[in-house]
Length: 350
Length: 167
Image 1 (tube, one colour):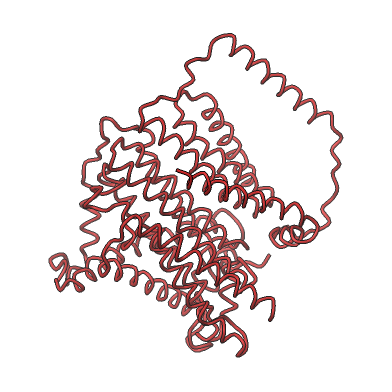
Image 2 (spheres, rainbow over the protein chains, first blue to last red):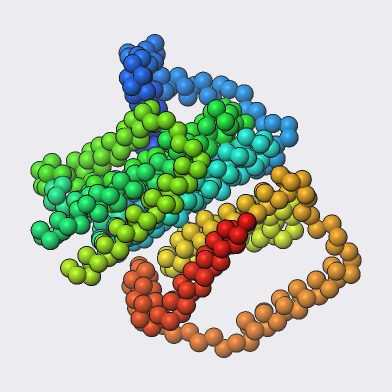
């Protein structure tokens, strides 16, 4: 099989190339998380007309590093009534689940950690580990706020997985593939070929453009709910549940939950980028294309989605539980079903 | 070499966590150990080149069935204070359960060793993808089974909605 992993070409298919392919996304994830935390602090400050952190480094850009040092120093507390084994296991399960998604994300034309032809399906499946981890942590904390937060989170993630999966299914029908690299290469040749604008094809694709725009919007909303971000962050609603499923966690274990949330944010942003925004392809056709520009475009597009997530978090108020379920089951699900049928019809006709 | 290490890792993971599932007195440990059993089975599927089956295993068993089991146990034992433990098991029950288990193990291993398994060389040498052939088979040769499964699931969904509404 043709490989898209540049390290396999250089070192051959051995342990070394596998190790590099695993470590490189992890290094990227750590750097990205630091930048995203800084972004969250600064963007929230700008939206609220504050300055944000200003003391650590010029304009406070070293603030995330200071936060990491602080978290490492914190005492690691396990509550007396907690189930020790599961309490300690939960942060690892959550982080392992979210990091597993990085295995199939095509960062560039020449680098996908693991090239498998059911990449989209795989990313969706490993998301299940996050649900298990959250429920594990919430239950093991032996705290009613944690348990309530975990229950809310699990039900929310399961509900919003359905419209999200329907969007992915529509995209798979449109692209005729579940391979993330193949979906990306299909959209090569300018932003007009992105699936956001109906994908590659002649003028007949115009009448499905409203539906593909709607699909990307549905996925954006569903992904916010799946990553427990505002306006769907009721699992950790401070005014009701203290901090939800991670109420009892401190120090680095809390940091693992935090880290997993940022990692999940990037994964949904990457899925949205690959499926609707053309992945690593340049929006101007061959101009600014190629290997290095590919990495640049992919990270730029994904970070733009992450920026939108942060922007929405500090702009919108939190929804109620019943509003959340109403939106998921009675608005997003019918709309995504209609879009799915229309897209399938389009594929049959053309 | 590497494949062997991975195989033994998954094999030990499956057997070990399956033992925890069966032998643990605490139901919640059994359920969470089931996570590692399902994951290990998915790993074995990957080693057998059944990529679609492996991901489906994670999607359905970990994402669906296990979450359902966890909900069931969390909402019953820890919240209501009712302890689900098999404290009633006496010696007579243990004896008969053991007898039945040994009988099943012996008969299964007898069948496995005495059957003349028909092994044919793979006709399709390209084993990098299974999803396309699975999809084509499901919508042509096995359409009836596929459709009856989906109708069955639809009936289950309608039934669940009906039961939930009656209150």
